[in-house]
Length: 204
Ligand SMILES: Nc1ccn([C@@H]2O[C@H](COP(=O)(O)OP(=O)(O)OP(=O)(O)O)[C@@H](O)[C@H]2O)c(=O)n1
Ligand SMILES: Nc1nc2c(ncn2[C@@H]2O[C@H](COP(=O)(O)OP(=O)(O)O)[C@@H](O)[C@H]2O)c(=O)[nH]1
Ligand SMILES: [Mg+2]
Image 1: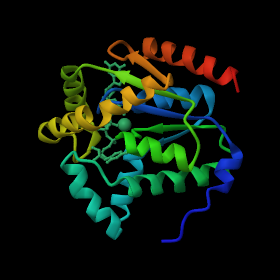
Image 2: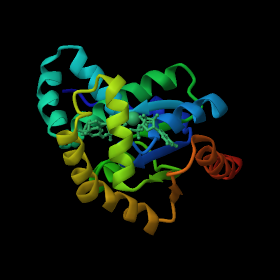
Image 3: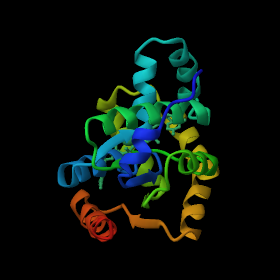
């Protein structure tokens, strides 16, 4: 596969925010609110993967099995989808990016930042496991997602603890982590989010 020309994305030099948290921690919910207020482009890596599956492509078929096992899709696959979506958004004048559900492991973050540009901040929505399970089982009633069932939820939580928690430590060491207690109401959490985003964007 030919390498993707990232020049337009690098030249745009718009702020990039990683949004991390366990499955069901409210990443998508908060991203919708951030988009409404700040006009950033929201890219959910999980949604990009689900779109790829829905397209019926050969690449999509391989992904289904991995996602239903609650495991991680190979870094190159996710990063390629993210890059393609970012380039499309930059062509339309994107003001910045919320990269939701990525990085899932330290190497995903390192490679993204090396190849594209460093993230400005990493928002981490911190929610206890029992709350995550309750929320996901509730969402399962309407989400239609093949992975919103108790067996896959348990596997996703395991993947989060083993692969993604080190991501949180990695960015904490770099002083880029904003850890938000996300057990409260959507509006209370959003108030903390806006305080941090206002601070980060005023320095641009
Ligand atoms: N960077 C990513 C993002 C997603 N996935 C795969 O896609 C699945 C669903 O991802 P996502 O929609 O982000 O789900 P959750 O993290 O469970 O978060 P939520 O449902 O809360 O959005 C993951 O379990 C994983 O198999 C992945 O491998 N790598
Ligand atoms: N109680 C409560 N529920 C929330 C909050 N944020 C999201 N939810 C619910 O939790 C579920 C998962 O949220 P979602 O935004 O899809 O989380 P994501 O999986 O991290 O993207 C959904 O059913 C939401 O309605 C919150 O702040 N408080
Ligand atoms: Mg989501």
